[in-house]
Structures are given as structure tokens and as C-alpha cells.
Image 1 (tube, rainbow, N blue to C red):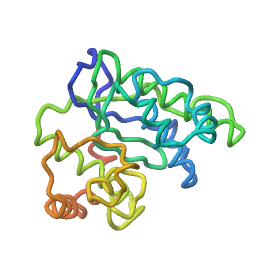
Image 2 (cartoon, rainbow, N blue to C red):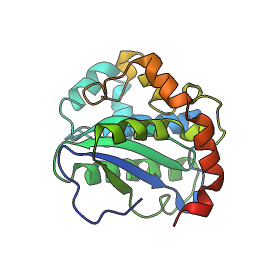
Image 3 (tube, one colour):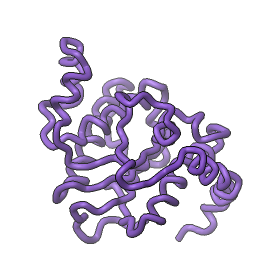
Image 4 (spheres, one colour):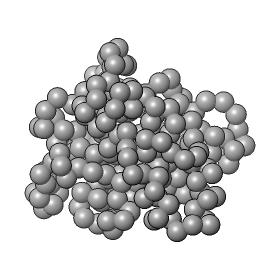
Length: 220
């Protein structure tokens, strides 16, 4: 996947990918996974009122839903799909203003790095350079890309079925997440029937697992 060579364009859809240095595992507990998902959701806001760590302190003194609503009234990116893996992150995003994805990614990665280094008493960077991105040109590409992203935990043999992995958007696609806890906005971009999409994804499990076993031989 290429590094950014041209500016990311407003209203376009991008697959964003970032991984840790030397495959270092940085999500070690459910709490770590939940932390990054909430961080991602928080920084979709155009003007966050504070850092995410301070937001967590403030929300203890306020109703969470009310505070979230007030901070996320306008967004700089929309999340269409995501998957958090132990050593890397996949996001499918719509950029809503110039330079929004770069701004968003910088805030998310810095916020989680500070949390992780504080919690695990370490120093230094977590991420392997800047994030990578690829433009999604067509609706068909978008559909296939969501399947690839959602099958990551299955391809890595972390779970048998994608809905068993709690840290991706697949469960949202399957209608298994309460509306007030969803962070993705894919309905305006994908016309999905749940049963058809489930079959579309699960029919590819064995093939994608086979590719995972040989990808080190075919990547340039």
C-alpha cells in the first residue's frame, strides 16, 4: 500500500492503515482495544473541546451521551469500517474537509501512544512511520475492501468467524451493536442486506486465510 504522495481529497473515501514498529503488540487487553476504538470515535469531531484523556475525566462528571453529542456535532471524517488488530489498525474513512485524515490520524496515534506508554511504563514511538492510505475509487472496491478489513482477525486465526471479534465494525454491519454505541456511518455508502453481506464475507474466509499464509512471498 503506497505512502501518501498527493494530498488527500475532500469527500473521497480512503483505506487507512498503520502498524506498530517491528510488529510490537500494543493492544494487550480488552481495555486497550476499547480505548483505541473510543479514541478513534472521539477524534472524528472537528473541534474536540479537549484531549481524549481529559474527556474521560470530564465524562465522569457528566452524562456520557450528552457530552459525546455536544463534542461530535460536526465531523472532519466519517468512519465507514474499521478493524483493530493486536499490531495494526485498518480504517475506511470519508474525508470531510481538507487535511482532515492527516489531522485525525495524528491525534489518534499520539493519544494512544501516550496512554500506552504511561500504562506500560515505556518510552518511545509505537508506530512504524506515518500512516499509509489508498484511494477507494468505486462502490465495488469499497464493498470488497470492507470484507477484507472484517476478515483480518479470521485470516490471522484469532477467531473462527468475523462476528466473534469485538474490535471491528463487522458486528455493526450485522446489527449486533446498539445504535448508541455504533461509530460507523456506512448506510449512505453501502446498500447492505445483512444476510447477503454475511454470506459475501464468510464465503471468502478460506481463500483469505490461504493468502495470509503466503503473503510474505508475494508482497514487493
